[in-house]
Length: 437
Image (cartoon, rainbow, N blue to C red; front, side):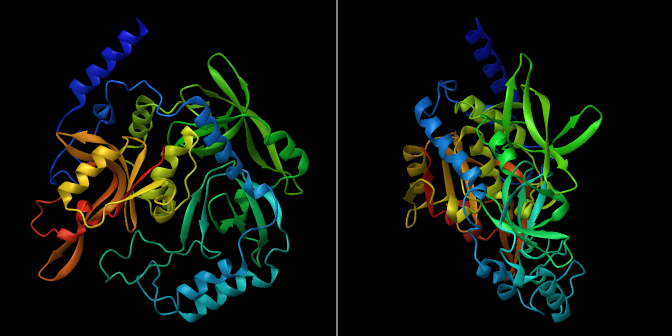
């Protein structure tokens, strides 16, 4: 009876939710495909894509990576800390007022970075709220010239990544005024607002690490205890699972820090549709459910404003299934079995993807952008991705047709734009596919 009811719901979704795109930034772009991820499910949508043993093995490796900052030494070098000062130079990058950042700004930031204190602390810690990893110890943005095509907002090169609450970190040192800390997470290093982190001691680690984990499967939700707001969470956030109750999961979450700067920990109950025991079963249905939650999210370069870019989207999609991906798109393309698509015609590329790819378990890569292969529509590849825009060219001047959100699209979406640059079409720029299973 349960199986029949599930199939009926799927069928109803397929009938009702396949409709032309409306009220979207890319409403005039063709071909138009359903924005309902359940539309792309195959008949075996409930079957696991990974065996239980293989998934547990993947999750074990992902857990080791998650807790890596709590073991051993600070892994990034002083060269990593200094890299932004060599990459972004006075007069070559711009502030929020579209004026060049002057040498004085860089001198002040360099002094604030307290370079001579690198690794003086070298201690384990944890994020106690959502935050941003920054290339410099400041929230001031740095843009390339706004006159360059595809530059300016939202491409703040001072932004490294968003960090979830409850992320294990390793603290190198603090800025000269103690307002920022240079830390490393399991996937990146950078500066974070020091109010967002706390130290952890052996007792905390011994309580936190051995427990099974739970994963958040709803996006942009507030976590509170009673009337006290703690932090916001997104899909892919991991926390120790303290107890499984009938309707809720009881998680251990960091709630602040004491006078010595050590993290405080409390049990918080979340509904079972909000958080699930990790890893969740990797089925087409569960994959479509996560995509449905992430659909339409505003583009956020490097996790700006708590949003996602392309690689954060794929990373957060796979982590609930126990599959760990690095943070940037080029590294993600190297995280499985890579199949080159270079030298193929568009038709040959799509044929190769459909024949060799696995819907919801293969990613497509072009330099600077990564997409999840979601399935096909009338023989055309459909991908789920969060992208800023498509390259255009009018009278020799390059521009962008801004989409700026997460969508389901074909690989030749926008082909009918009168000023589209053929080299800017996804299908022409894709260089490979990576199978993660």
